[in-house]
Image (cartoon, rainbow over all chains, first blue to last red; front, side, top):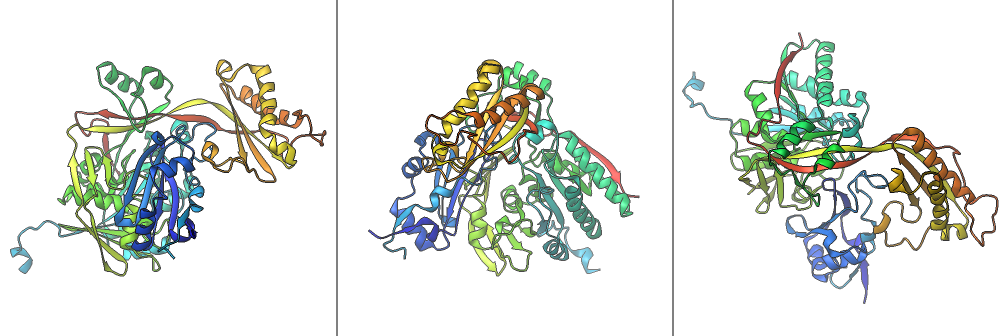
Length: 110
Length: 466
């Protein structure tokens, strides 16, 4: 099956602290139709995200499909609060990279 | 006079400009700010705080940026606000909103007023720190200091480990100072959105739209597109809507950018907690009403039955040194954990186990999983070269230095059975370890019930100018 990378479909893919013990991820699409297709493809769910980041589902604090912004959003608990010794990403700003390469079934999105 | 027969209407709209989502952290962009000022707003406001910067500034009672940057932003805002004769409002002074940061900003405002010979104005300010003993008394009296985001309720031991605690103000101290006709307000730690919501509520607008106005303005141009920070945006609140307009010539506030901002930096895009209630954005409707302007209706606000205030506190772990090494040999890269294990053993021989020895030794392996750690899906595919950051943390600087030095230099002597290069396992760009800021952690991320919304936030009024 032909697929396309999420990075070619989304306008924004980012991560950022949401308070001191959470990192939140936003995947935002420019077009409603593409957003709907990705949403329906189920490549982004609590389950796929916990597999990708290799964390138990309990570490996902929130998972929201946010229609007003054509966005899929999820939030994870940190393994330790931001800025603790050894924390390499105090702002949580570089945790989104693995999302870029998620393969989305191409049917209807190209 | 025709004016005299008009009934005394309350304002039909209130217009607020925000030039910076974290004042002092990176300088405001002056061109769009000038355009914002030319639009003749009723209020000029910005938040200056963040817990994104980690626990060190709160712990060490410092700011993250040079005073010159803080002065730059405050100077632009102060001169504009005095010229237009409209209030200027700053929340979370100096990143942390600690008492010393409020005093710092109050002094800067006084200095700037003198420097520019501004005519006298009223300068209001409030503090947000809560003393550890005050907090302990409340805990003894039976108050539960409830944990947020996975934190357990606050214990005596965690409070003992804490250096400093600030409480997060809502709109209340700002409104009190506006009621007293403050021309400039410097706030201690505050919810970002309340800096903007306060003047709107003070002038009679509905809480729901007022808090939404704050929510959309708090990060300045992050609610606009194309992406570009530190540019001014203008928010307008009316009886039934909030309108937000980008001031930069090339930026627009679109339905997508404004709705998208609602989810920025929060786990749930529909709800925002502030002291005293919850902003509910789940029924918000967004309309593009002009090229650069989006109109938002449908925000709701639910007052909470109990008035709870968020607390933030940082506790010191120890003094800290850092070291750095590089690795190029592919065999050594494949066995980097053994190299680190060797160095850890040498530290252990000198100081015992980390826990018993009361120290910390941390390795961050760039080129393998340095940025993401355990979340890294590609950690079994390291790059052709690695950089390893070593951090030694201990009760004294001398001990931290020695731990870091052993932990760094002993990587050079690691013994791998089949390594070809036997003259040194790592490369040094610097054969030294460097003193870093002390290590802190967030010990307090909790909420506390209060009887009076103002009890943790004493307000003061002084004057500046001549």
